[in-house]
Length: 258
Image 1: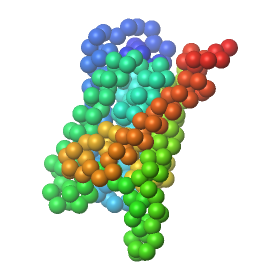
Image 2: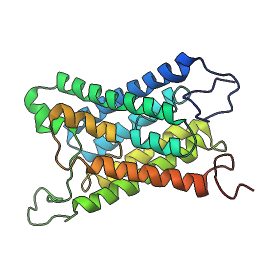
Image 3: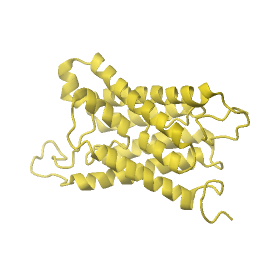
């Protein structure tokens, strides 16, 4: 049997206790490193200007990184998902705060490295790979007369709904003791693929404040940035509540345990 990682996260039936270094430093660094590589890959993929390439680059990166770090930190790489996991009883609040710091720092560093490897003009042509609200521009670049007419308010709802979808996929496949661990990272990654394909042309498809915040800082692109904090964190709150009250295992549910 392995050791229990990332504070309290219950991915497996662990028997041994962790050292302070493993519990706090190693797991936080894993979240920093995972978010760094995820943001670097996600922002660099935006240079393709192809939604299919972007969706699969981000989703497969999440799946692979989650597989690598699942038994160290839980493989979250997302402050809003961390919030949902903490609400669900998967990690203690102090560890969640450390993860938040690591994830936001990783997003900043990943975006900075994208700027380092691209020419200045190309970097700012894609706004550093930052998420952009696209619902008020023409869906088809050849048809300037028709837009989807999505507002920033409905973009928040889209980000919220699809964040719930992603976070519930993670919680049910990685946190629930009855889940199959080997498929958990795949469920997380492919949920990201589906969500990006669904929302890229409307909300801009973030579902991850760290991935949005990093390039926004480095490229100084803040237009409608609040969408990418409000939607995911409301989604994280609702996913955590649903898990605690209805969908969680009896060891995590707060009501109707028998």
